[in-house]
Length: 113
Length: 110
Image (tube, rainbow over all chains, first blue to last red):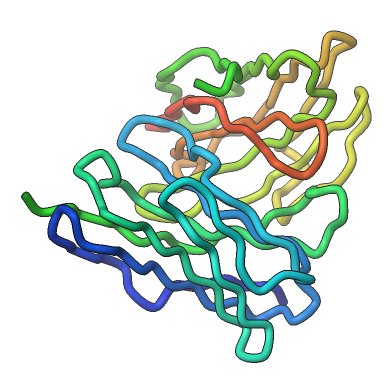
């Protein structure tokens, strides 16, 4: 069945450093992926997405890398700021209409001053 | 903010009761998805509604049901509440593949 997991449940980085959050998925048919950020007491917030026909996509301070060969997804955050502290989820789907997203368990990112 | 609103923000029920949670989608979005997020876990897909019809369902029993209205707002109903139903219930609206989430309703079942 579909499953999405994360290698690191917690990640602590110094302010200003780059952060890398990893995600492994098991369903090779997954063709669309989203990274979400969830702050305490709030719903998940869209960060960036990528389709399976791409290897890399960049946004503002964030980059998502997709390695379909090893079914691995990563989120890179440049110059990490205190406001980046949150739980980060990767979500994947095989549905073209984005119907049934499977979320990973999440990685907590803590930014140290 | 995403423009997706949910009510109530918190709710306490006892086992066996029924509950209705509400969601107003972002303007222009015709699709609403509901997720259950247990403490310390990622959201789990319950079901999705597109133009008032159920458009997919996750691995949840029939006592979880929903509705979508002509204005695309939605309700999640849970009958015969169980202790394990305690969770954050999230609704997400979309017009294509990206789903935008509301703040959630925290349900506690005692």
